[in-house]
Amino acid sequence: MGRSIGGISLSKWLAVIIAVAVVVPGVILRFLHLEGAAPLQALIYGIAIVGAAFLLSWAAEVLQMDVSQGLALALLALIAILPEYVVDATFAWLAAREPSYASYAVANMTGANRLLIGVAWPLVVLLVWLRSRRKSVSLEPSHGVEIITLLVATAIAFIIPLNSSIGLIDMAILIAIFGVYMWQLTRMPAEHPELVGPAAMIGSLPKARRRLITGVLGVIAAIGILLVAEPFAHSLVETGTLLGIDEFLLVQWLAPLASEAPEFVVVSIFAWRGAAAAALGALVSSKVNQWTLLIAMLPLIYSVSAGRPDSLPLDHRQVEEILLTAAQSLLAIILLLDLRLSLVGAGALFVLFAAQFAYPNIHMEMVFVYVLCSLVALLVGRKHLTKAFSGLKAAVTDPKQFSEHT
Image 1 (cartoon, rainbow, N blue to C red):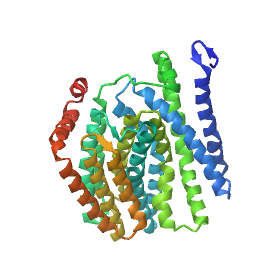
Image 2: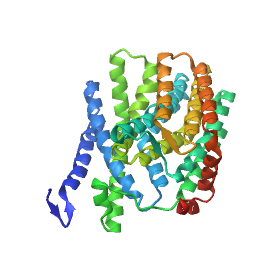
Image 3: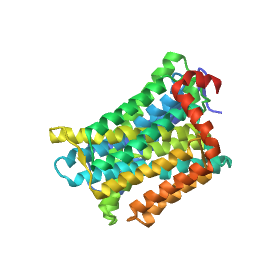
Image 4: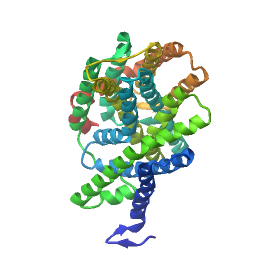
């Protein structure tokens, strides 16, 4: 057994200290502006992201003692995907001066969204199955708020391409959707979570000290992620370029994968430790963030850079990318209508995502495949639809009373 002072295990504090320590080299490297050695830099930045992800996961767990799980996970998701906002905002800013960057902005946004559902969601279910042989992951009933929000945002996403642009009206609608979503989460009651490891140690502290340490860990994690994730993405892209990988593919897939890395690590930690509902809940919250605020940000940044109100233009390929991403979202939402993602459903999401790499030029064909699979999923699960929608409606209209009854 490890030594303790005042009943606090030094071994558990050591985990926190190590997590903070591994963030430091990445932050230092960020300000050194060293040239070359992209693979080594990617390694250092990647380790820093892992350390920050652990800090963020502990802070998010303890935060659930003061706010609802949904709100805690939404805040976690927002912090974890900050790098994605930075990368996409950069592309949108440059697009006002160099039109080719508009395609990069949309590619990065759609790539991040499709990676989230096509890889991260199945990853959680896979880790749970490997760890406990459970064949599904169930969400808390309160996550009906996210499902309804995603359904509305997905409907908007199918409409956006009709104008061949993402405009300021689209921005206003999406921000309003996100605002209502966050307002609903603030109405959810807090529940005492089951904490383990460093999170349990922090959670056992007096309220004032617990909140202080939770806030400090969250701030350290946010600053670390914000500082190192963008250079991590650049170093990975540079490494891919050295290997001769197409630049557009790097922007659409490798850069989002790098910027999503903090969240992938956080949810993997949750899933492996048995907090499957929190892991999937965090990913659903991230999808809400990326499917509302991330898209809304693009025309706003583009307009600011252009110096006038304007819409981010979409060419034929970008229209197809958004429709494909919306179709994938539709299937994912339908699979989650009963607040449960099975191993079969997760496998379907991954296989359909992987097919896009095997056949990269069949965007519209894949849209039809996703829509067809959505109809089949609706048909197969039609017996549960009435119960699912009544439960989702209750979670949205009266979350406190609904939480008490469940």
